[in-house]
Length: 426
Ligand code: AMP
Ligand code: GLY
Image (tube, rainbow, N blue to C red; front, side):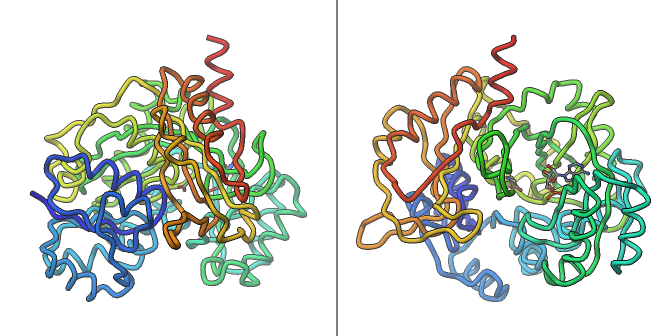
């Protein structure tokens, strides 16, 4: 039996906890800090995860066999390195390997060395040179703060004015240290898709596809968010495209990371742009997507704990991952004000009614006060359903959404529209 510590507090971690709890290999599941949904499956701890010694002591006291890290920040801060040095198995990359998400420039340089298809780019440490390059290339063009900026450091500039303003914002400190360096990148055309692999340093195991909706409003309008909904599989990712992505993007990345002494372990999440020539890499993340993880966990047939353990122990070559034929779709319910300042503390009811028809409601930013569930963040609930195709999963997810009684929340009504249109044509 394995005792597991899960780090994180979002819908992604609730989905992981829900799936890990189904494993026959599980002893006790702990989560830090967790949320009220995760608490249904795990013992919560208020452990400070930025205090690596405290995490190590906790693991020793509770005889933890595997630590699973959900979000990127603790990985970039070296939590996996500290745990490994203390002899504790961990699912998640080293700080050196987490640079794939922590530094856009690092990833672009890897692409250049390994011939990985991606947009043309240059890295800059001052505004005048960045502006001169942007002017020479012309709009549309993409401006990216180098470091972690909570998903807000990217400007897809349709005009040169926007591009120049974004460059100024970065160097004037809008993203703190993350913007001290800027990547100016070619605008890529096509359809976006997310592709996931579990990695153990040597082997990359394809682990599903998804598409998400980043904009806050229906019709993909309004400001960017962490993601307002997602579905899996991504119809655009055919088997041929998956094989091309493995050959041209993922495998060279695994080789390139090993070559610089930073073999990649954990989830490699490739954001891809697909056009008629195939996939191009937009960016890497070193963790599961949120809310993409929720739809992957719904569709996974196999024991997630066995797979995470195999990845942590370098044994992925000996396992496989099988998926339900069903599609899964998740609708994010957010608190009014998101992605600006979300209103906290509004009461939420009706979750049992929402789940009565087979949907699953994952908690993200929720809290319990005197047994009343309250909103406590931007993205609050992930209402997730499976169906025979995306159209069916979408209908079931919105039926569940409509059973939730939360006047302080809102959601998009068109999650999955692209796949639904495609299914209507076929
Ligand atoms: P990122 O944080 O790198 O995922 O970028 C956020 C979003 O910006 C992506 O999901 C894309 O929609 C868009 N984006 C980033 N880079 C490009 C690019 N080179 N061309 C077109 N769109 C892009
Ligand atoms: N949903 C996008 C992300 O997790 O980065």
